[in-house]
Image (tube, rainbow, N blue to C red; front, side, top):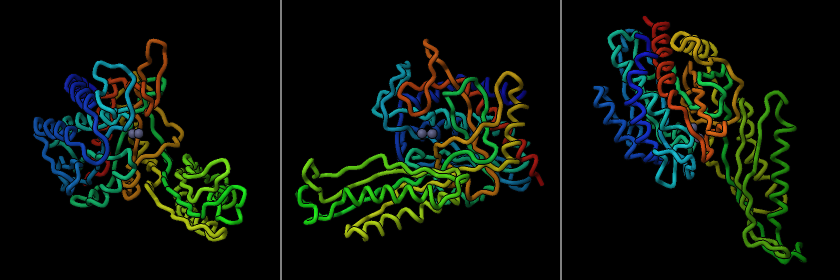
Length: 396
Ligand SMILES: [Zn+2]
Ligand SMILES: [Zn+2]
């Protein structure tokens, strides 16, 4: 029986798990209800696990390390702090919701593991699995690294999925190499000296300094990066607390994010931005603080593993689904922390649109986003097939 047929057999169970997680979303690093359900399902299917350090991440292994290499399968399981407006019978009843589909990811990994557990004797190596919290903070992946996800056993490669509900057809979408952007999220505080707007020479104007910092930061992009290895910087929040039409405020706060598909460009921005802030501040007598809130690397796939995932999807799903390479997306993903430490990795998308009565589909993080639950069949089937094929390719 193919993994597609097997995944169909588990669909009702998968749907129930997914809807239960969906109805009871949790955000951040602590996900007590979510992990309780996942642990219960792992117990029911005789899959042993433990917590990663003292985190709410669940890890474990299947198969036999003596027969080959170790492949990490990772899913996230946290929701986002937004209200859901899809009006589903199982919509979130809380002030957060699974609008990024991480309930689908956790359930997909669960189904893949149940199927791989059935074939455990035949696995030519070892599967290591990770159910991860706090992806949406972009710091969960970092905590996984710090808590030892790459040790005992050390994975030789990794694989992860994400739902793509705004695509055209059901299927599997794969980035051959560059997949998602780095994300440097930062805060800047500029302390000047308040003054009457008519007497700027008696103060130190942090609004003026902020404007110079914003200009200076953008010069990194236009003057210091090659035009084919670009990055973006967006300062999405600026607050001049205490200022008014004729009052120079004492302080300005800025928050922003920088993205790039290229690790070297991301690194340059991460080095140069704090220098620009510090030196422009000094030039105009203001005190500055620069704080990094998150700094996830760019997510890059290994072309050979991308090809293996594409072939595995074609093998297991046949012609009924769309399977293709896609251009990189400019979003970010904290699995990149783990992937960037692995010799091989592939992160791919499960295209899962379910148009509403007017034919609309919505992207992740939209309050009305709806995920086609057929993804709970094709996602795990592809993941399990690709895992088996990768282990076979690297068996001893
Ligand atoms: Zn998200
Ligand atoms: Zn997500």
